[in-house]
Image (cartoon, rainbow, N blue to C red; front, side, top):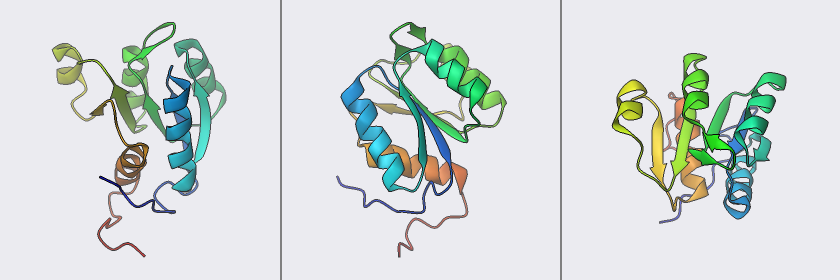
Length: 135
């Protein structure tokens, strides 16, 4: 399935990309830029993701649950508490405790089309945007 890129989905939004598989990270970053967003990162470690969140205002995030130096569950919770939309893109099943604590967090199972991630972020950031009325 191909999702047509929409240039305004993420217009003006800074999106953190934390993914330890660099080819996947670059695909996600490209889709975010195609949707009008600015990529913060990509980074492969939790430490770098936290550093970027502290030093750069992010509007949204796409996070792999398991990064090179640890699990990003706490970061997902912190960003959600700050009302920053987060999408988890992971190859592993999430613990039920995580799912019940943060039911609003969208979770995609790898492999995922990067355009689908950009569209999902756009829907979260702009719920008023009617995806069916594409220009």
